[in-house]
Length: 247
Image (cartoon, rainbow, N blue to C red):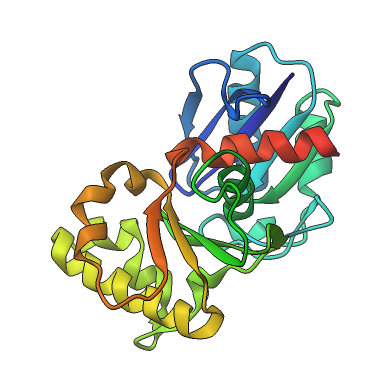
């Protein structure tokens, strides 16, 4: 069975049909740049471009970088235009896609759902935390495999700032940090999250997970096991499709 997944990020909108039996993309993904400003209408146009690229006519799961309630309504919008707040994203995107059934969920939650079923969290019980490092920091918290949605722990305070402004991949790039410097910031962030939630496992996702060997070995003093996401930056697409299949 195939369902379409779309992952809306701060820098790109990417999507593909997903083979739900394998938990992997059925075709090579299509990606377009996230418009700036990333208003609802402009982003919806980007989602339509990605979906139309495949001539898709079935259900679509879509991730969003913020709090999403009821599979539809946007409540926060840290890395896209603030006009998203209180938008019914499901209605907007369904209308733009010619009436296709659309399900919307938080981007890190989608990545976490995929990793727990098909990736690094498979068969893991206890408390598991997936963290995605990219334009911001996303989080997905699981207790014995059950998702606690919309945690958005990238906005915890770290050194008097939003954590994602200190330890995201964007912060690394913007300030031209070495891997060693950035790893120290990530370590400090993980220590803070560990103090609050005591996870047995951290799964590190986002695009930077492809380069995990450059920074994970530098992180010390964390009790929890730390592993890279196995689905890497496709996890959000897969998780979005999984959620749409259950809608």
